[in-house]
Image 1 (cartoon, rainbow, N blue to C red):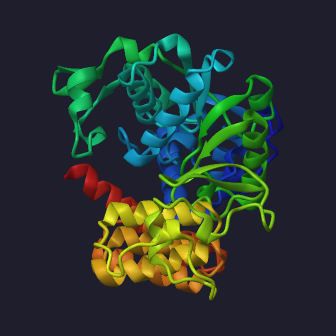
Image 2: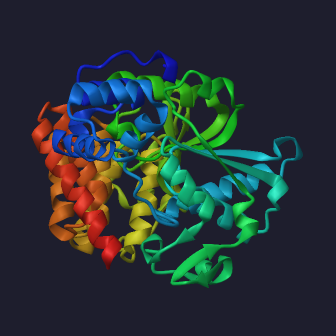
Image 3: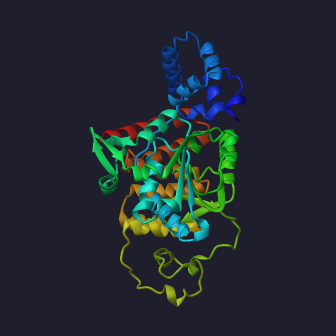
Length: 417
């Protein structure tokens, strides 16, 4: 709906559902009522009905209220493997003259950490600014103002490898200010994915980042956003989602590659489309280490010593991804379980197993894996968000709210460390 079509709402929760598609249960009524109280105090409004009338009539006040609600938590190169995957994809397209410039959309974009990370990555591999464009959209004016300043505190730098900060930032008064060359690669604008004009104002994109938005939306708003993303994305484009979101998106989408669990593309899940396990490349360690599913001899290309050397955790995660992306989730799970016994407990491996169970609709086993993840890493925010999603699917909104609050506290602890 457009901003002019927002219909009257009896409560703040109703208003947020209609305006930004927010499912109030995902953040809890306490958070919403706190935002209402803060804005009522700021405007000198005495009653909630008067406040709701004001935000319906006053666009600026409506935006200020939304500012108190939206979660703009991010940092540079969050989930580094995602950026590595997208960098390779964009570099490949940029080598094709008819695909230049490669078009990228980040929505929502928070304070610019994600689109700026993309720009730095692409410049670092030698791409020229004319070879790609990055549009960054957010419903928060405050976040967009921060992005335009491109001045960041230590909270925005949470990775072990911070060499990119030395290359692209300068120190100024205790903050890190981004180089103008990177800033010029990103075009920021206000936008609401639920607004009908969002699609009409933009052309097709090769890559769309839409991370950790769908999990906060109502079913109706989620369906609307998915239609918008589907319209904006080119037929062979990539859609990048948050950790818990591939399991909830509807339509014929398939994993885009083994190196990223959160990159998906269009595809048709048709029986017989994908190769059987024993036809995976001989270099696939997973194919070699799973028991044969029939009595026929294995091809000579898969012959290996009876006791192959153990795999490292990155190798296991990679090989499990190969199996999952060939739509052999049960084999991927069997491989993970076998390797987990050899490697010992691992939060990364348990989380991947949980995602595989969740994508297959086995919520009980997924929940068990996510709890094991948290036992080993209590601050694993993706596992907390995944558990919140499962709780919401079961109708336990109080439990979903508890998990989301725990995820927020985990974010805060990492930010202060």
